[in-house]
Image 1: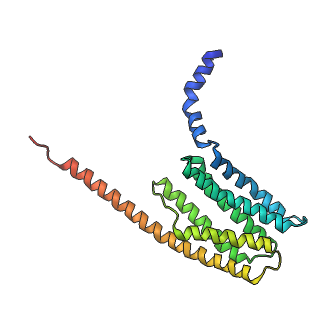
Image 2 (image 1 turned 60 degrees about the horizontal axis):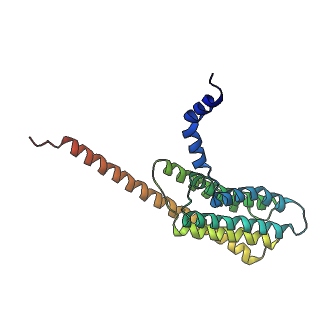
Image 3 (image 1 turned 180 degrees about the vertical axis):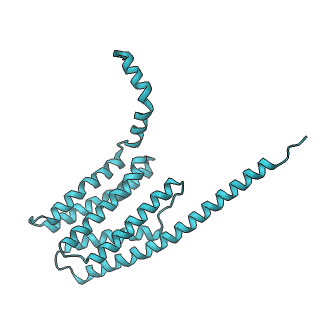
Length: 223
């Protein structure tokens, strides 16, 4: 067995590409740190919201607001600084869904939100996330639409005010929650129509490329 400098050299030669891939995957730039912070704030939100602490609703609203702010900040910083990484692409949407789902489930357990409202939002988020990841694996990128961005804003606002308003919530907060449900459904329908269109276009491009390749292979060569 190699030892000393030979072992070190052998290790670098054998595992260098692996560690380079890991470093690229888990590069801790500022956007990724904000994504990790959002994930770490999820259990804090649950504990503060469910715990019987003084001014618990206010503190929970502040934690949720801070976590939601990191969502907007990390995306902006990643684009403006050209710091988009594989880790960010994977974990950013997961962190968003964890935050929303944790808040909704906690509010349902406190009887401050109807279970069917949470289920509609959670089902939409999980379904879209899974299909988007599957499409990405096949080389199909589905950009967020205007409806998707509006859905996120309304959902965050509804949950924030639902937490901050306490129990019982004012009528206008209930209206905001039902508005979030409505725009969640509309954005989901819009997403799946867009997905169908994008997949059809991708299939047409592949068929055109296959036809062009076949035509080039069968074209007779000049004598």
